Amino acid sequence: MDPLLVITNKGAGTADDENLAVALDVLRTGASVEVAATSSPGELDSVLHRSGSRRIVVAGGDGSIHAVVAALHRRNELKDKTLGLVPLGTGNDFARGNAIPLDPAEAAGVVLNGEPRPVDLLVDEVGGVVVNNVHVGAGAQASRRGARWKKRLGSIGVGSANLGKLGYPIGALLAATHPPRLRLRVKIDGAIVNDLDQPVLMVAVGNGAHVGGGTELTPEADPEDGRIDVMVSRSVGPIQKISYVAHLRRGEHHKRDDVLYLRGSQVTVTGEEFWCSADGEISGPEQRRSWRLEPAAYHLLLPHDPEAAEQP
Image 1 (cartoon, rainbow, N blue to C red):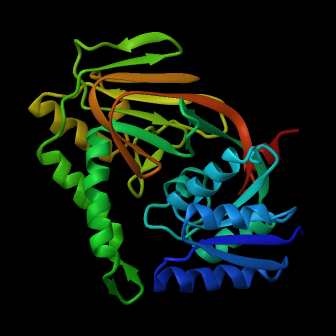
Image 2 (image 1 turned 90 degrees about the vertical axis):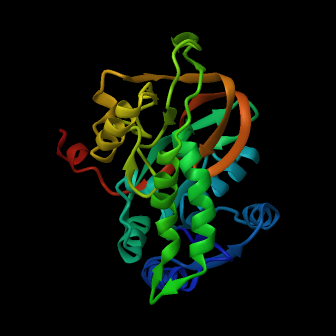
């Protein structure tokens, strides 16, 4: 197998260090491995500059895979890359959506024996990327508040547990007490699907299905299907909000009458000021954002597809 360059977060906690050691033990049974810990975009860029022909393995969470993909995209080196992922983060939503095991040893096994498959990417109007999911409105508000609690709790450990994982549900609970009501125009492939006269609770643009540590915000999104999934929630009434949250917890919200669930290749959101949460990174306030699909942008090592294996 090609040599591996494992990129990890220099600021990872003790539990992540232990899981990384487990993964490295497995990886070293099948390949030569170099580990590079980075803590800034400059350090990451330097590591990628000397990566050569080695296969890159991201050992971290959604933020880590986002950072590596974004850097490679910026360097115009993404198209020819095959990446592996060993999920060590708190949410690991991109790993969940791609059936990559959350167990570090099993994930390392996928890196060694998995199938390289092309996956899509979302690119915004200024060249930024979204690996998994971007959302505005209630979800972004929950992410903003959750990020604060994740940082506060992340330094607290109980055994090997990372209490930072509680940040997401705490943020969602706080956002639910005062959810936003935004007037936004949403266009998909140039067609208006929601206009300013129809207020929304949130808008999600999904390449992957999960956010916030397992919530299926765009349940039917598939990063291999060459389409963007768009979910627009119009559940702005008091009772509607409660019902929407209940359906969201079951992954059935996209079937509601007050929710639009559509697909396309380019999405634009304009209107009142809003915040964005893209792969967990918060930005804003904004009044206009757009995203386009870049199909088969790179290859990712994934578990073998049993259905594909059965086809003649």
